[in-house]
Length: 232
Image (cartoon, one colour):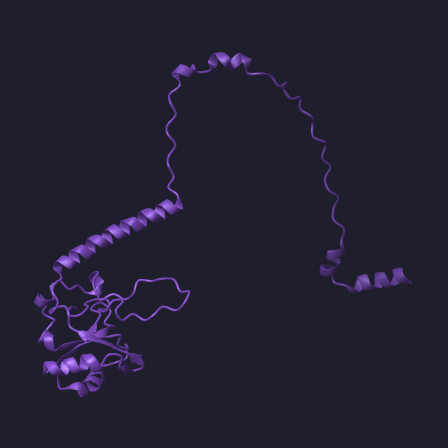
């Protein structure tokens, strides 16, 4: 009965399905590989006369020194440091706020305002500092390459006494969520003054106290990325 049913099922299947169950042809017969006769191992005694005399052998070339990753990193860092020092020295020599065409007004009536929010406008700054006296001019400093604000400005008052009042009362004033830092303009009033970008600044006179167990860091000066007190 099983064989009859299998034959019946086989006849009902299409040829494409039956081909899947067809037996494969037997593998072809291949004779065993022939064993080759290997030559006998010998010595090199008969080749000694062909060797080069030790006295005629040239000295080996010194091995090439491969620079390690740490040495390469240190060399590049030293190169960048030397270039930075040379550029800094050139900028220090060229720095003269008294000859800068962008700096105008009376330096003894000018207030330096730092740590300004990037969202603060000149109109907002004028409104906040106008309460200390009439303002003649405000210059909010921007990056000349990107156009973004640098976070500091110069406020020139009509009267010197108003500037002194703003200097005493305006420090720590909160504008647009940030407490600003104020100081007098030092670029044109202090001899040999240099902004922080040129290695100057006031150091840690008003730097915030570092938290406990925090690594010591160099305190920021006052002057931002370019200018300090009296230079852009």
